Image (cartoon, rainbow, N blue to C red):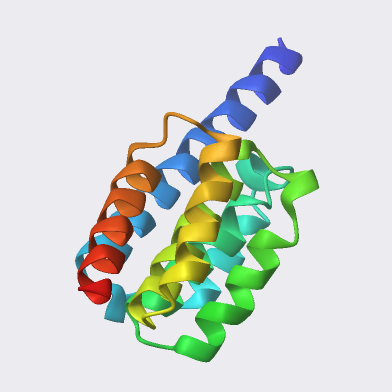
Length: 145
């Protein structure tokens, strides 16, 4: 009947959208030079992702980091970190981890440590935050010597 045909068409669109996202994320990890912010913007309006807009600021943030666009990276990171009430905990944690690593790269160790502590308050079992915290303690101990 026509209702089941409509459902099948919608499901097919959703599967295709998810496939396109997977390919885009793979391209981002392998060859970020071939990915542009507009690629994410096109996907964001598709059937599968209309209600999950929280994912795209994080992906765009990662894109700008991989391309070395510091100003755009921080702009999109702020968007991720200021949207915590509208997104899953996992997105907030990933945004905070990016922030902590950025502070670490700038040798702002105390601020980085505070961010990683915040991650651990949200997700006490986050291995990345635990490892980063341990590394920061080690660095700070060596700086005091």
